[in-house]
Image (cartoon, rainbow, N blue to C red; front, side):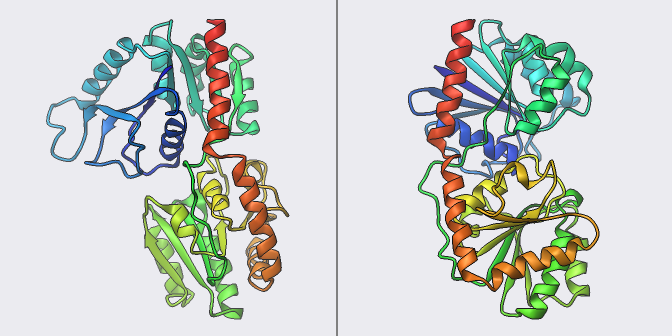
Length: 357
């Protein structure tokens, strides 16, 4: 089969882009795979692209290159032309805005699949045009339930987790006194409550360090909080990296303090390195991606949550046997999201949809 993945920009550092590139790479064995980026926003993609993937872009939006006026119109025209000219067997689109356009303009003989992570902010176009698609695929059962209710059984919705990159994966030796965390530094990721909790850890175990990987609008506030709590010798802002698993492999605990976890790529990458995870419980949180007590420790949100989170971190800091047991569970969980296993589920779906076309 020829499979095309259409994404807003394959050049950014978002988790959904990482997930789509991983999936595209997983399907290159036995298939012709291309990734079409609506916009090219930098010279090279932030994440590595498998050399077996053909990568192309529709609009050059790099600084100083986007010279024509009314750039949005130009982008829409380029997208419409590309969709009408699609000759792939399967077209997988990321994000509702692109999936709506796929439903409207891609040839009907092409199997069209929407890859979704969150419920759309504006559901009306989705409800109108998605019935023209062949399927929707979500990464969690909770997402599948939301999309099934939204589409009112007019379109089949499937759950397939996001795949990890092709192996081998880096593996932690679990001998560094390091807690790591990664992601966008925005309010929903709640890195502030991780820093406050770690202040209690550092007070009792000053030989442990916290490394924060990422970037975002909250950086200034988070740095101010570190200064306020006198943690400048304990908390390190590491910046962005295209190899987050490689950095997680240097840690002995990965902290995920987010209020909601939609993608779970950070979680998957931590599990693949054999590092236990500490996070918060909640119906749309980590519980969708981990097995508490087997590969992770989750604490309840609400009153006393900072103290509870600090206690969970300390329970692993002080108990090497527990850390190692959860690390083994993390590796076991990761194998279920390996590239080969997830690619097989996608292939079954694609061939099944083609046979019914």
